Every structure is written in C-alpha cells, then in structure tokens.
Length: 212
Image (cartoon, helix red, strand yellow):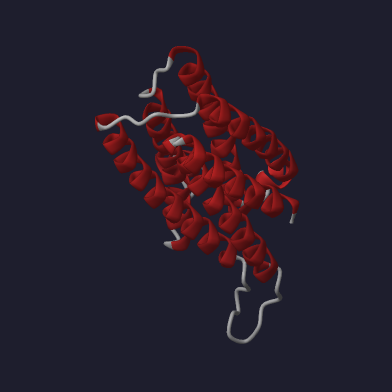
C-alpha cells in the first residue's frame, strides 16, 4: 500500500517537473514510476489470488497467478524501455533547453521515495518471483533517479543538455536487461521447462549405483 502511494506521488511530481523543466529523463522516469505503481498493484492482486485454496476447476491451485503477473509486468516495462530509447534518439538529434535546478529538485524527491520503496519490498523479494519483478522495477527506478540527478547537476553546472537523453538511454537499457531475465524465468515456469541441472553429471552418478 505504501509503495503504491509513494510511486504514485513520484509519478505526479516527475510529470509536472519534466514538463516544466523540459527534461526527457524526468518524464521517462515518470513513465517508469507509473508502470511501477501498476506493477505493485498487479503483484498485490496476484499475491492474494495465489493464496486461494485449490478447487474443482483449479486443481493445482492459483500459485501461477503470480508468475503471470511477473510476466505481464516485465513485458510492459520492456515495451516502455523501447519507447524511451526512441524518444531519447529524437532528443539527441534535436536538443532542448532544460531547467537543471528543477530537474535536480524533483530527482532528489524521486530518489528518496524510491529508496524507501525498495526498503519496504526487500524482504519479500527473495520469496516470490512476482514480488521480485516489482522489486526490480523499484531498483531500476532508484538507479534511474541517481542518473537523472547526475544529469541535472551536469546541466546546471556545464549546460550539457545532451546528457538528458543520454541518461534516458542508459536507464532504458538497464531496465530492458533486467526485465528480459525475469521474462525468461517466467516463460520457463509457464512452459514447464526442465530446471537448469547438469543431467550428464546426474546420469554419471546414477550409473555408479549397482544394477542401474
């Protein structure tokens, strides 16, 4: 609940700050945070569904609701990353004037709220792939907030406006890498793939047993 509220607050602050300052990095972080808000809500709902007892229709129970949520969250975030890369490319070709002071102030607010959100979800991220997907969203947000903050400082001190789309590209690439890993895991689970074991070594050990 608190993570949802924090991310909704960051989203609004960064949208307003991004529009007023002209920063694409802030707007990209705002979109990222909006997806995080939806991701945490979806993860919460999936977590509740997963806790339901099995019935005549779902004889194996509802545990895979969490895996579906993790897949959806990650797929949406990957799509957003691609859009941000395209927008950053356009901004690199046609740089715009950016208010570095406002960019720094909003990035600081976002960073503090992201750090608190990460702390709130850290414990359960190791127990559930669903919650881990949301946790990764928040980790990437924290890193992106640091990038936006650094970009704002560079713009304020040296007026290097191209650093704004550069930060956006770095954020998008990092997020894409992290989400692809989660997507791979969820697909393997949903497709009931064999676990990553050394089958040759297992066979060799079994063959040592008499009469096998």
